[in-house]
Image 1 (cartoon, rainbow, N blue to C red):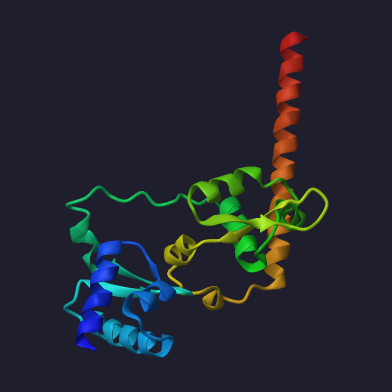
Image 2 (image 1 turned 90 degrees about the horizontal axis):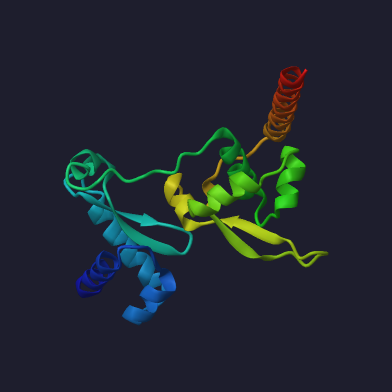
Length: 200
């Protein structure tokens, strides 16, 4: 078992990114039950207070990560990693995708009440969402879903750990979207009036 634990540790360390359970089972020629036992042992080892690494488990993969308490020392050596800057609109869009996935732009816009091209494009750029095929309907619109980076960013192992969303939240999304429309219309009206005055 110690030899298998060492091999798993070596694989995860060398890869740097997450490694699927299937890949680990194939590499070690073991079954899922044995893998889960070994990963539990490895996780316990990394949870010791004096270790600087921790084992993260996602829906179907594992990854070695630096312990959060070591972050302050780490950034003295490397550049501060860039974190996605999420606006309220982007967070709302991401929330809808997370809870309704796979979902199309049209479905997101039906909930928010406004166009969502910009927030969707930014979420794709940040790798928080990805394309998940196309809906079998007229026009075959693209479906979107969250990524493993989304789980990593929000500190959860699976979508099942997301808090239950309330209907009131969806209504708030719609209300905020209507406010956005009002602001845009007001800005357009003000700009038009100023333009007319300048020519008048």
